[in-house]
Amino acid sequence: MLVNLAEVLNAAKLYGDDAPKPPFYGIYQVQTFIRNNDTIAPLKTDSARWDKLVVSWKGWTNIKMVNDSTRHLAFEPDSTGKKIVMYNYKDTASKYTFNCTYPRKDMLMLTGKWNNDSLKVLLAKQDIKEFLLVNRGFRWINETPLNR
Image (cartoon, rainbow, N blue to C red; front, side, top):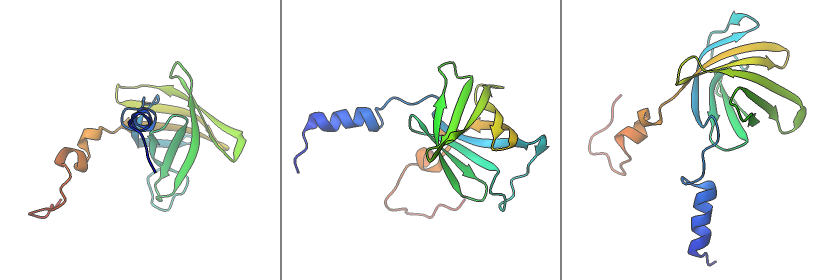
């Protein structure tokens, strides 16, 4: 199979590191999760409490729950960044609309309905540079073990 250089460069611009980043790009850690006016603790047995919101591709998001399950959803922010619509691809009739506010530069507050529950979720955007693999670097061979 022969691939020419133009195809490779075009693919990098569409899908690789050179691809444009979608709105809300990043990993958001849930700081506070309020369901029906009750603050929900991050119990590992709770399959309905969010732990992280990950936006890496246009039109998609992953919500990681505290019990380590993941929900893959369509993700449609409006052009002003004040509303987000999420829904399951298999059930486009049930859409979840959230209002967005920004308490700080690196914080995001989502307020809306999820199924029959009202949610208020405060999320903190994680700095990619703080990830161990990024700030320490990758090594095929470690001369000394990394004990954290």
